[in-house]
Amino acid sequence: MQKVKFKNRNWDTVANLHLPDNFNESQNYPAIVCVHPGSSVKEQTAGLYAQKLAKKGFIALAYDASFQGESGGEPRYLEDPTTRVEDIRYAVDYLTTLNFINEKRIGLLGICAGGGYAANAAMTEKRIKAVATVVGTNTGRAFREINFLETLEAVSSQRTAEANGAEPMITNWTPNSAKEAKQASINDMDMLEAIDYYRTSRGEYPSANNKLRFTSMANLIKFDAFHLANVLLTQPLLVIVGDKVGAFGSYRDGFDLYNKAVSKEKKMHIVSGASHYDLYDKPEATAEALDNLIPFFHEYLSQK
Image (cartoon, rainbow, N blue to C red):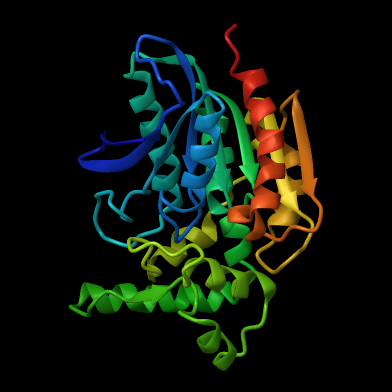
């Protein structure tokens, strides 16, 4: 693995470039951009999939989103869907500058919110030749199901306050512990598993600090990751979900994306008995996902 940087407008994106065993710079490799979930960083689930894909002969690039992790950009802790999609374009730009990568053989993998961003980017970024999602989530749909009008009113008030000198409001993506969730009467499987993944030794990472700029919510609420997929999403598509369904909605979003995509070659795979977060890092669930991802990318990123 190599740590690399590439420009994204006027700031640096920091990424890990995962290389195959016996990597030879004089050879020509297919590449896959791996897009992390909301609240995540490149060393977590996106990095796990990138590492496994590299073992199978792909160059895999996992990067920190703009405003987050080790990447630059201001203001910090912003989750902006438009920029998240643009991050993918800059990642593809970077890959095309590497002489050991065939620019005609670039694929895209997104996990959770990263899956929604991946699908959205692929609609207009035709350098991407194949796209796959693992528990891909349409973040706008998810946030529109939770008191969204009240949230928009609160965002408006907060922007006014900040314009007049108040400190930015930085909230948490999840409660910091299962105990904190219980005190808040939160008992949904997906949220509790998110806490178990992000806030314990299972998956925590120092730069994944559970911070979200509250005013991000306005752009998240209005975003529809799958808008125009029925017209523009033409690349081969693989959608992977688990059938243990929680409130985050990745199971139904998976079907929504699959049904909307105009792709002539598309496949859906359901991992039986797997929850949303099982497909982040649990060996059995991720192995089954990879058993589908690897042949999919080999088929559509093969040397033509």
